[in-house]
Image 1 (cartoon, rainbow, N blue to C red):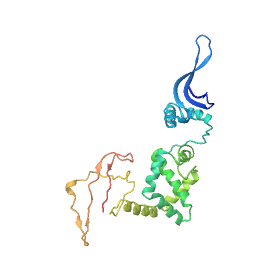
Image 2 (cartoon, rainbow, N blue to C red):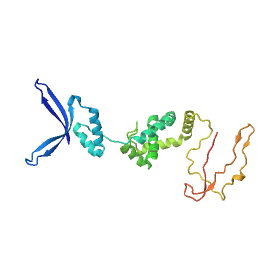
Image 3 (tube, helix red, strand yellow):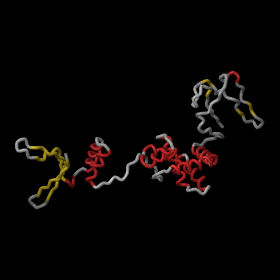
Image 4 (cartoon, rainbow, N blue to C red):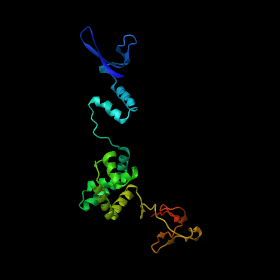
Length: 252
């Protein structure tokens, strides 16, 4: 099937063009190929081009990306690259919204580093861990071949390791910046944030007994301070040891 344009000359000499959807059929007797009109879209200047666009989109759903590119070649479209966007774009918006990118750039600039490049490298590593976990070397291939990250067309393993060195060296300062940003954004009144305590565990002989816990005690300044919490219970730890495990929580 194909779209074709036919012309008709009126008595006054004017020419009218019509757009039709047609396909070729071979005559059963003569064997000659003739065009059979499946649908007439009407005069060319009055064709509903939005309807044609919807038809193209509908047909494209049945084609592979390679077939779609080959079909578009006739329209003089050259595909230079194709990358995934969705997951990385959403992660980038959350990253920016809670102020992680700004915090990294401020700290990196204070250490005379390329702030924008450093921030983009660290975002790429975080996004890769969230979307397609792998090694630093796998991250370089992921950024260079599979995903579209604004401001970072490619990533080398040297960049990844330098970014991690910076992150570890400046972790306390970066954490303070992000803490202030998140507390302001969410209007929180808090003193402590525990980050990544999923593998923390205790090894004990018996589980905590709720009945033995003392009541919270008020200090000299009148502030109530909680005592030990009964969070240690028997279970399977994330460190692959059969020991007592639990979770830590802190509130202002």
